[in-house]
Image (cartoon, rainbow, N blue to C red; front, side, top):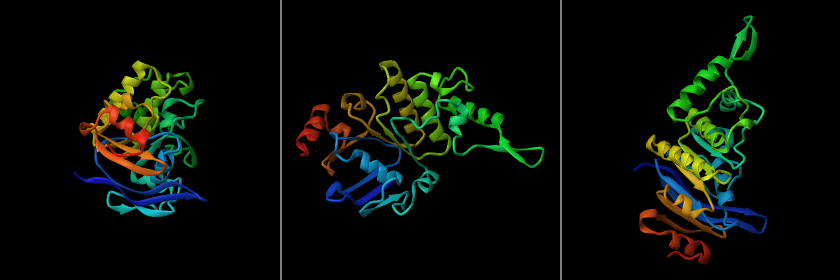
Length: 248
């Protein structure tokens, strides 16, 4: 199967601190990968280098065969790499369709020369992507602050898919959700996998993500401890590797 992401000998130093140490991995298209480890293991630093927020101290990153570690975050989003952080980066005072198009607003001419938002277009396009992903939002004109945590997470996911994400990185996607909404989010993640989207999930909840991921990437003090298929490990083994820093 095609490798969508290849990371070779990646390191990141902050002064004398080595946050990521000689990290290499290949990820296949359409996989769901869980990146796990204790606080300070290097998870956040790693995803920020993949997304372009941090520039590596050493090493290379390739996306669909092309080197990208020299590109900034905006260029990587254009290529199809999207990140959903814990805060979701939604504007609470704006509605669903404006959030989906935020930063990429569709405009039209008023009186032939004045640019205004094409709200009808954005609303109709948002309905299409939400319907495709089986996401139910009561009113797309309602402020997202009034929606549930699961609905807000779904909007953040829909936004990335509308803009053709091929690699989606999710940082603790269900941390603030109840059991029912967590189940809905993971159903949506499985649906994205069926569409060929590669998904990286950062999570502390091994039991929760064990049922959805295809493989685990385990970090300890910035080092890769294991890149193992879920089918060849167990929850207890994953936890043991996180604690011991040794591959089971």
